[in-house]
Image (cartoon, rainbow, N blue to C red; front, side, top):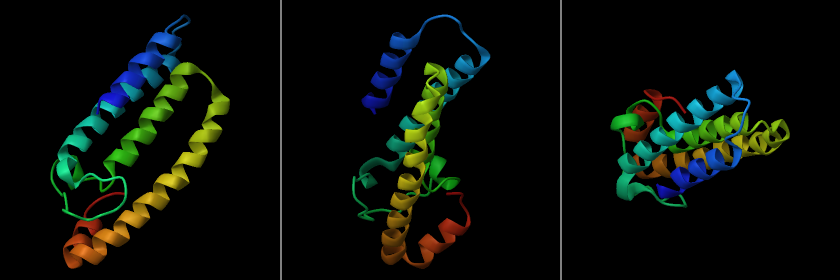
Length: 130
C-alpha cells in the first residue's frame, strides 16, 4: 500500500502552509489514521484482494472481524480528511459521488461472497458493520 502513503505525503507537502486551523489539523489526523488503518486492512486481506469480486477466501480476522469493507471505509475517511486538510470544500462534491460507488461495489462483493460462502458469510455479515 505504497500509493496511499505517497499520496498523503504529496498532499501534505503541497498544502503544508499556515494557517494551521483546527479543521486542517483534524483533517490531517483523520487522513493519517485512516490511511494507516487502510494499509493494515489491505495487508490483513492478503491474497484475497482483487479488483473485481472473486471470493477466493472469506477474511474474518483483524479489522475484518468488525468491519466487512474496511478498505472502502478507511479510504473514504482518508479522502475526507485530506479534503478537510486542503480546505477545498467544492471537492466534497467528488466525495459525494464516491460514497454511492463504494456502496455499490460493496454490494457486488457481498453477493459474490454470499454465493460462494453461503451461511458462513451471512453469519459474518450479521456480526459486522458495513
